[in-house]
Length: 631
Ligand code: ADP
Image (tube, rainbow, N blue to C red; front, side):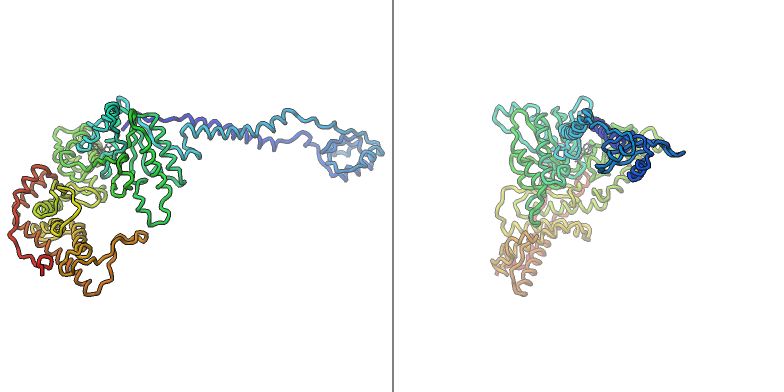
């Protein structure tokens, strides 16, 4: 975004000037010590030779100073200089000796101190010292990045102006996030309206989502819409080698921001400083620097009085689960806004936005491109259009055509392979059936959750698609049936793959892990197995200093251990069979919903409920296994 950046080159120029002066003075001092002093041209001879020459009565006159004796020979030998010099040694007899041999001699008057050089030697060194000090002090205040400036925050400030203002219209595909942030714009624009009622304006909003989905852009848009300055800094820029530097930077940032209030501070990669502190407990002492920085951030957020001139902190992260709980409590980042990868229509809008910035051929069908880019984030789409324009330019075309976009997709996909997931057509089908399997089974079993959304837009680090279940009420206790329902739902995805494709894939690994965990807990923690009875076979809470999170088992006999394993297995098998039965008897719904989701990528709300309500319960089957067969 070409927003105005307030930058100041003045300290740097001053730095150059002072540097030049210092170097000049140094060079002069150095040179002066090498300069030949007057009198140095007179040849020097040893003192003994001088004495010999005096004794031989060859010396006409001598001039004696404290550090040299200059003398003139009476009749110099040809080629010998007539004027010579020697260094005096302590010799009390010298005047008598000179007198005896008829030498005319005189001593130099005592040296009068040179006022000018005295002043120079007393004044210049301290002056240089003061100059250097002042120079550093000024740089410190002027915002330079020198040796003493590590306590300054490195935030960049943007002040939106007419030309460069970003608005919500430029951010697409994240409508819910925009809606939530509209409220923040209002807080910034009309704080009085809330202050009058005594309402406290929120201080922190956490934007959560994968990279490139437009979190920074959204924050800039909030600043643009509210017409307030925008401070941007990355969490990692706070952290320095020196303990305390990060905290000082946080303090400095908030001080600057308060001067410009109302304004927005945007902290990218909040997880760099906000990682859960309990996570570092395994290492004695933890991470001091990060912890201090975090504490300072919390203090600052608690501290500012956001009544009439609010400073709102927006922060972005793609790992919200690692954040310290203290950051998320009310009064801090208590609002969380999900900024997810866009769905089909979102991608279409984003492509349209960026399509307008290049010369598109009228024949280009952006809908087609949007459909082929499932899993692309906003940044990928912006890159895609640019890549297509580059291709068109290389081919010397006047406009960007469909083939350019298609080729750009391939390029971007090849480049992105690791970073984001783009599903091949057959994979997409598998994911669709898998997710619908979860949804149908989840709808039919008890467990207190309602299936609210099915999506096959890849999301997060590992999920290719997801089925969102929302609890219908707050639950603190789960019955055996609820837990079994959860296991069955988790196995619904894999069961659907088995039924439809007759084969299984690796996609269910996480489901199986979770299902097995629940089954194991039912047997060994909650005492829900009738065979093993109401005994807890594991110990609560492992030793966190040793990094153990799983509870270790009590010492049990081999026979009991085998029974536990058998019970867990039985539970999972029963649930698997149950899931298969549900899906078998709802084959048509499975097909219907899967086709719908392949078309639209996301189904939710009313439409999903209507589709799911058509599902029917399977014929009751004889469930074997110990949990069902009560003795
Ligand atoms: P993040 O902060 O989530 O990593 P950015 O906001 O830095 O992502 O996005 C990088 C660029 O990608 C933006 O400058 C913008 O050009 C483009 N972009 C990303 N998401 C969107 C979106 N939803 N709508 C429009 N452009 C987007």
